[in-house]
Length: 231
Image (cartoon, rainbow, N blue to C red):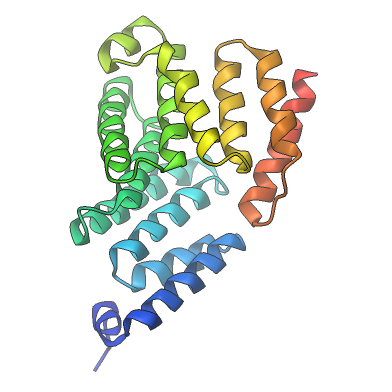
């Protein structure tokens, strides 16, 4: 008889599940996003499915544009499944918001504005469940920055606020001062506002921080390239 993923999950003890989650995370940290997503989803837990969503969204950055939309949709499905298993999993709402934000970049204007609204709701939910989630504040800062950059119609339709950009990034950096991606995304938001000198200052701080995982090293190289363009 074929053993299903659900059966396997039920057979695993709590320590074994935790160990398997760590193994899936280790695969993702090495850049093996497909293996990580499969291993994490097979756990059939809320935490596992949230990690599967994260890995799938991350992996989409490595494939051709023609394949991205399908991966962001898949990540969204993983995150929704994670929420259905645990409605109090802040990471699951965050991953749903992240997938929606990426998906909006490959959608029409009306659909993208709808996704932006859903994204904001999911970020708010994630932060209500975990007020110390630094990544949530980064995402909110970017949400406001990107919509403000699109102009009056996008701002009017979404409720984005230029005055909410800096406070969200500052809160994230105060919570996790040694996480480079927060400063990198802050720089990206500042570039959207035409604040190149301030963006360069954030990138200077980011590139001085250590990079351990595949994704951190990739972010670091991208930050160095952006910094070179700003000089």
